[in-house]
Image (cartoon, rainbow over all chains, first blue to last red; front, side):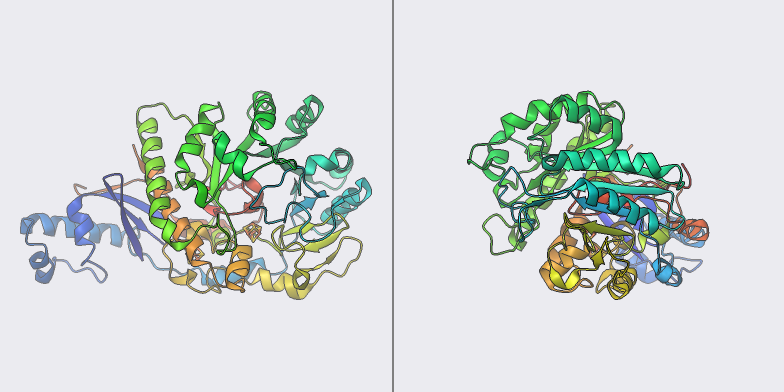
Length: 450
Length: 47
Ligand code: SF4
Ligand code: SF4
């Protein structure tokens, strides 16, 4: 299977199953409308006839080049990976999203956690529960050495003592268990101060800082509890944090909604503030809500992605790359192995979310949905039924994915999205798919530009 | 080749043989908490 597309005036052909990326001229691009295996020693006459606007010799030449690529296993390769699909069964747990706070000090209109409480009581995790969660993770991680823990919320800084004590505890026992904890935190920044910034920069291998872009955009959708904007409060704190971060990862992460479909402006704005690791992504929301992204927004969103790709490509080619955009980052040479690519996040199987009172859910987006509760860190009974359900999710078991050209990049999308929109973790959400595919095209184009 | 320039040398087929070690990060953890793109991750084994 191949996928071909035009981006920024270039013709790009992706060989889906080998991951090969080819930049071709217009003739080869058109020829691929007709040429497909089996390839013959000589270009069939029907094909030269169809492309009569080109000299026949050129068409034949080009056909031979395609044939060579095919013979070398770089074009029209077959998908023979299904035999690896069940390798995730009985996988150990290696990552945890720790909901240290089901409370928040902002009132973002699009919050999937319903302003932090996930539809339940406002609650903070106790340091004791945080420590037991670390024990639980170690106990269920079998031979995995790298364990990831993300402090999440609501707003995790509201439970700062728990964050600090959990990290200290995990560090105190990681060596004896032959583990290596990698902590990350996702914060709105309101409560950041020097002490917290130092701790985060020392202990957290990545941090995600939420900011939606231009002041008026951010403040409209990310107000404080009293209704005032959050932009002016958080910006100096984020700058301070990033300045002290050295070469550790961070992302300034925004969400775009129907209110800012010109989100490339927000990306550029965040970059103009001095941040270089950026991510701005579409809101996940019930389509009936006024800010939700709907089908008719797609053309505008696609043209924004195109615009952003063009700007970034120009920067790259003139040697002046100014920022990374998370969704356009792709590793065409040394990305994950194909076995990893058969499935996405590992939620409910290798990755779990833990609530303030220790309940376990497949991931942060399932938290609070009773039917998906998997157990508790205070008990040894983890729902094997739910775990297996997620372990068996892969591109071959999901509707549409097996035929989709983007499957080895997208890996089947977000299960929570599928559940929220389609009511089934095996049914990818069409709108999300369309945007995902567009971003992957942009990413491949940007990465291959030289 | 005159009409085609191959951009990368990667071949997913080869990664199948040695892959699946499970050492790599889970995807939603790495940057953004509401979406995932596996392809921008690193392989920990080749590091
Ligand atoms: S874009 Fe959609 S159909 Fe394609 S692999 Fe991703 S989730 Fe599956
Ligand atoms: S289901 Fe979606 S939100 Fe949950 S971990 Fe996976 S990618 Fe992330």
